[in-house]
Length: 248
Length: 248
DNA sequence: AATACACAATTGGTTATACCACCTTGTAAA
DNA sequence: TTTACAAGGTGGTATAACCAATTGTGTATT
Image (cartoon, rainbow over the protein chains, first blue to last red):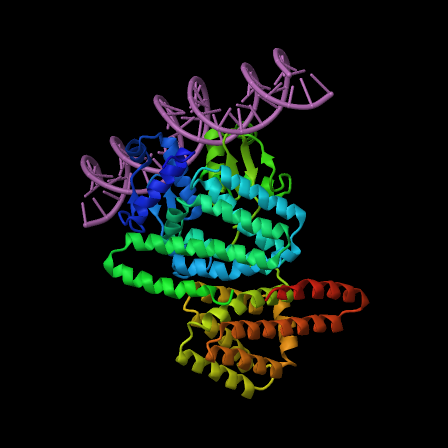
């Protein structure tokens, strides 16, 4: 639970307050002074947390009035679809595996060094810290860039936006990633080694393995938290999404 | 001009510093205390500004070390990148081939009937007519929908936006499609038949063939219209982009 | 000369307090 | 009822001080 920086935890706490439904869009949430006392932190920290949320477009700060929850849909940019974490992961499996295979033929030594840096960074980062997530993003983005194709980079950016800007997806992802960062580091390592050997098939296989396991973890997580009724649904999902591996 | 809140102004100023090139990605920018003095504001404001930039992903804050400029990743979101027709086609080859393979296991009879309709429509349409292009879009979009994955649909929509909204891409594409609509109909037919047989590998292969040929056509076209100097470039491209087929 | 280690300087992180400008609201005056 | 204004609340900013992590440096050791 312990984040490095206090304002991050506070920001997440406020985000939880919002997403729990206690403060619907348009609502004004408690003042800085009250929140500071409630969380047992200084007012500055609350401010920093709220400013970071403002920067991402989750809240609107009105001077002299208060901070208000913003409608998550009107956050600007083109509307992202209401995809589920399963769908996003399946799509990433399809797309990023092929990117990895292609990158194996185009990647430079410098870019491999960059990958290595992100893997190390991730290994040293505390679980679910922002640094770890940033390293994760950098890793996948670097591979897209290594393909030397701007369209691939843009596609991956779009995929990552879904991961970070769709509340439901973000929640599930961070819940799962929290407890398998070890797997993640190992799998990133495997992909990197395949790229270092310039082996397209191995790179594709490693990336598919990475996302297959993530998919399984997601399904397991959803299974645990679901009750009987949800279990049937999850079973259907498993059959359907794991079918992705056909003919790989 | 001037923002109401000071930290907005400072954030903009820091952003300008970054974008002016004075601080390339990876660089460490001046400490909070120095910036505070330089801008004539308190250290708190500088912190707030940097935190807002961190939230948007423009900088990375390392405790005890400093704040570092992050490789611009999630900057705008709206703007389409300046991709070339080659890049777009390569990305479509990667992505849509895998979509086709997945769709082979999930497609319904109704959806196959829909595909058949688009193929017929395309065969009857006069060359490069708007109907033909619409049928083309419908064909590819139907396959994405057949995967039952909203994320795939959204990705394909994004790809199609590049094809239609980027002037350079649109021009080259329509120039090429004008004279090979026969090929296109046949290839769409092949993909459809593979899907009808629920054969993932055949579907993938057919779709790859479709885009491989399109890629060749694009390269040929660019070769014809180019003069000697351009020929070398085109040759490099051919080697580079056709390498996509490795291990398919 | 090269290496290991301890220490000090630097940097971001946090607290506390105080004051300002602005918004909201309720009340008193018209 | 409507208007005007005063009071209290809210975010915005400044200052000073201290904490914890990082980094660089200089000394001692090999």
